[in-house]
Image (tube, rainbow, N blue to C red):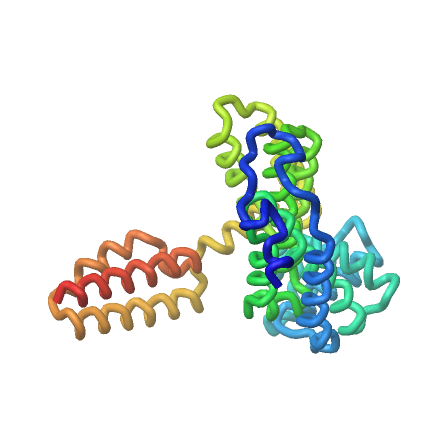
Length: 329
């Protein structure tokens, strides 16, 4: 096992510093480690090949089947998802990237659960191997990093669905790897490939757009002048702008900004959850700390609390404040 986990750097597991900016900064790829990761991924995911479609899986499958008939009108059909027939462009808040890939795969191998889950093994393997490749750039234990990702429960659950989360993550990891290695090698070609993967990642799931400022900040912290990096990242910006205009012309709404609007406006269900959550937190604070109630709740109210990321921040803030006050008592 020591041989596998010491797959980069010298015998003591240290990564040699990147002083030359050349490929010699990293040791040769460990093919036994890659083989181990492939076998481990198959062992974790193969038992779920016949898992039934559930949650939002059917939406992606229906879109893929429609794309097979009308590839240039990816969301030009209606579904009964909320009790009445609605245009799919109003129902789904995801781009069609995954559905296009499923359309190609399903055309050759069919639309059964086994067939589609087999295709999604490529996305799961891409995440694990991409983590290993990126780990070689950043850590002396890339194999351990990849195994941690593979054995994370939420990854196992997501990798056995046919939705966009794991394909987006695979594209995300490989885009970051190409960008980081392109920085190390001073390779504009790798930066352009990374930018292309960023665009595909964002058209697989809109969260992929977060890579644009992330990679820009990464390069800005390493270089005083990073104009070529900004030029490379114009590619995904241009493609996303074209997608916004195309969907506005096809469906009367730009689906990119429509999805952003959906995540920032509270529907009735989220407002009910927010009210109950806020009441529970106030009750906990007031019952535990008496007059201490108003201080943390008012401070946390600055954050839009019904939006999921803000909810996470709020929980962390209230928990930290409560723990700190308990220790002080």
